[in-house]
Length: 137
Image 1: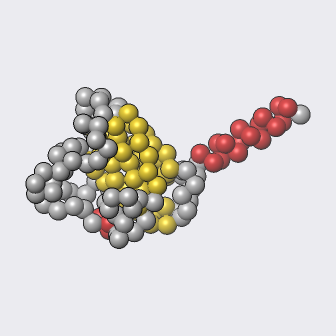
Image 2: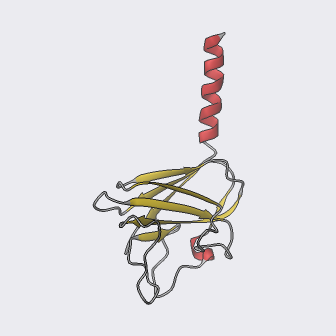
């Protein structure tokens, strides 16, 4: 009986993990600082401070991975940045350009403006999905 319950719980845990959005962050050099990742649901909130649908963070390490569980199906865009100086925010210069490594889902080509939601967005059906974000300065 105990073995049967263990198997049921193991199957449920595995199934729950299959319904997660997993974000791998590449381009972390030096191994110091904190990586912040945020999932957004619309263009009005995208990249706005405090407006993310869900957030995650962890120590800087090449290939760091973050999991967003229980996300409802929908359209999302994800951002990530490496907080090198430990102040909890993405630092920018006087022109508003980031001075710390950052990136967004779909890894769109960089220009002189922040990426738009439609450039970084993807459909998430509520099942398991893996995405990769490349951080660059």
